[in-house]
Image (cartoon, rainbow, N blue to C red; front, side, top):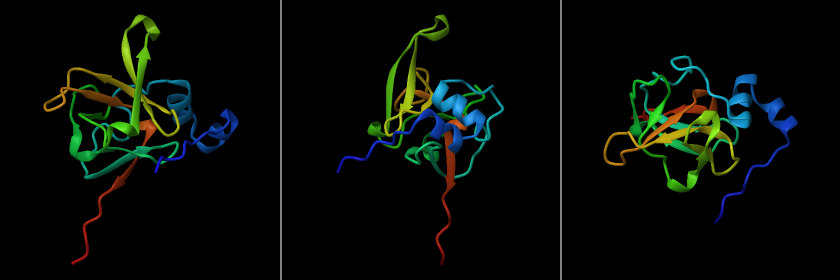
Length: 137
């Protein structure tokens, strides 16, 4: 079954998101390095899209890239994110977006760890973290 796309007006997004979340996800801004709430988080869990709740990255693929942004070697599933060319600011980069709502998440670079060799460099403001709870015994 194909997942339903999330489409909202700019006004709806502005009402639902904080100013920083809106600037990052809808206007393609980048939060300053070492300022986001998840860049140094080491708990187990799932990182979801702040706009639509889609599950994007598992903490098992998170690594310390030294860049000051949450970095992942792979998304939970390839279909959860999409990429497109970004030629802004005189650079050639690959932008990462949520497949469900087109939120700007960050960029992907070919300098990550094995096995993918990729570094998904993602803004904390584009994510919500859901901690894995320990099962009751």
